[in-house]
Length: 86
Image 1: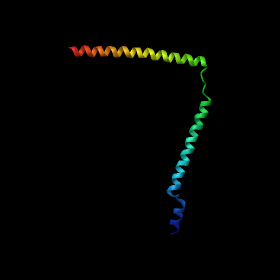
Image 2: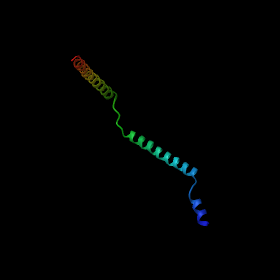
Image 3: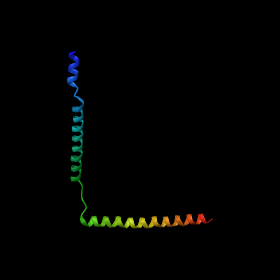
Image 4: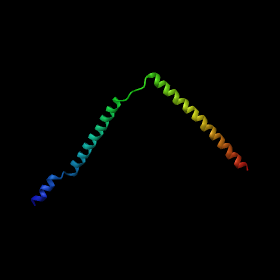
């Protein structure tokens, strides 16, 4: 009977296990944010001139790709119309 009572005393009840789970999870989440903040300190941010240049290159690329996709769509639509007329 003494072994049974000591086993119960060592094993925490479900509520304590539930709280311990969330406490450990909170520590892991906190550590992840801490590591993220540490990594962001090492980032070299672009200057204003570089940022404008990168943005213009991105917008130019998007326009060119939009035109290419439009032409492919137009051509494939005409091809389907041609095939449907046959």
